[in-house]
Structures are given as C-alpha cells and as structure tokens.
Image (cartoon, rainbow, N blue to C red; front, side, top):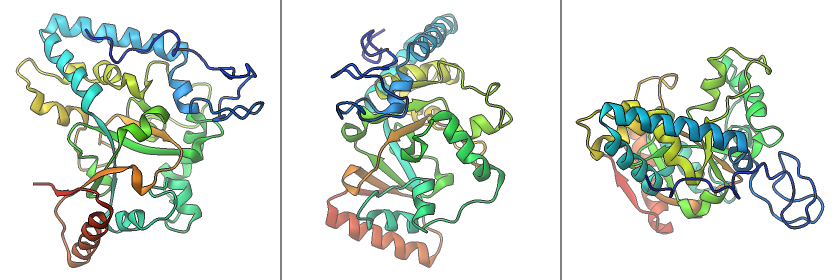
Length: 299
C-alpha cells in the first residue's frame, strides 16, 4: 500500500514546544507566546499526537487485514487512493445562507458561534445546541470558536440536510490547518451521554490530519466496500444520505480559522422548491459569475 497518506515520525508528535524558540506551547496556541512564530493549528497538532497516530495506524492495519480476508483489499486500496487524492471539504448551506456567505466581507462561512454573535442566527434551544458549547470545548479546548465544520466528499456533494447548496473549498488553502474526524462530532458525543468528561474522552484513533484522511476513511468504512463495488460508488460510501441529520454519516472536517469567498472552489446547487429559493439561486449564480466561481446544478 502506498504511504502517501501516512504520517512521518517527525510529524507525529505532540508539538508541545515551539519549533523556533523551543518555548512551551499551550494546546490551543496557533502562535508561540514567546517568539510569536506561527505554529501548527491546534486541531492539527491534536490529530498528530503520538497516541492518535498510533491508534489510527492500528485501526488501519486491522482494516486492511480484514479486507484481505473478505476479498476487498484491492478495492479498499482504490478507495483510499481516491479519498487521499480527490476528496475535498464541502459545506452545505440553504440558498439564503449562501447568498449571505457570498456577500460577506469577512469570515464568509461563519460557524455557529460567529453567526450567533453577528445576529445572523438565533441560538438553538434544543438539546443539541444547548450541549454544543460543552461538546466543542471538550474536543477543541479553548479554541472551539475558531473551528469551521465541513464534510469530506468525493463528488462535491455534501450532507443536504444542512442545505441544498454545496460549497467546495480549495484544498490548498485549508489542508495545512485542517483535521478530519470519524463522524459528526456533536452527535458522536451526545449519543454517548453528555456531559461526563472522564467517561467521554474521545478514544484515540478517530481523528487524523488532512494528509491521512484516506487512512481514516479506510479504518472507518472498509466494511462498506462490497466485493462487486466500483469506484463510482465510493462517494455514497464516504457520505451516507439519510433524511435526518441524526442519521447522516460523513467524515467531518475541522478547519482552524476563517474562510473567505476566495477559499471557495465551486458551488453546486440542487433542485429548488419555491419562488423565493429560485430568487436566491439566481442571486448565487450572478454573484459567483462575478467572482469567477464555477456553479453547477445537481442532476
């Protein structure tokens, strides 16, 4: 198997000290507090810890072994190559939200916290949104407000339960500050019975740096690849479509820092259902045309 998605020993470290001045770093730092040198994004450093890399490697090797026994080893290798080389981070928005995003002068995507602070979204009062700050603080201690969420996709189509418009991001502009996680992190934690921190620490091996996203995909999804599968079915394995967000399954991408409209690679639109949505879609096409961003319609 190619080691293109593997993590080198030099990369697989806790990065507890600055590479420039040697000063100690806090888990949430993105700059050294001593010399102000930029350091790896904190979510990437967490994914590169020895414990994470070693645990994922064990899961990955076990997946390859089991795939060999089931006769799908070659297909699994093709799946890993596809994810490692062709998958992109995608964000789904409603037509209205996408217009707001494209017209933004600052952080175009905005996460839950920035949207609430800007008055563009009301704080949710359901169980998930009430627990969201607790979950995010546990996963991204003291830097959760800087994380943008996306899904990993092989066909520029995302989880449509979050909106019918899919924004594909330029990998070159996010790969150094992105990590990937086994599934929807909020649902993962909530379904395990929040909030008991000692019992709910995330097991090692469920996250990886962007460069190892193919290995995580193999570790998680190897059993979903059937002996008679073709690479044309890989996208639906990577993102499983269900009518409820509670059932949607995808590998979650965590991006540290803001996203601007320049970060957008392309936009894909699905069918619209009413006149208001058509007006927003027309606006999206006009704005994207002026920005030089390709727009396509899902068939």
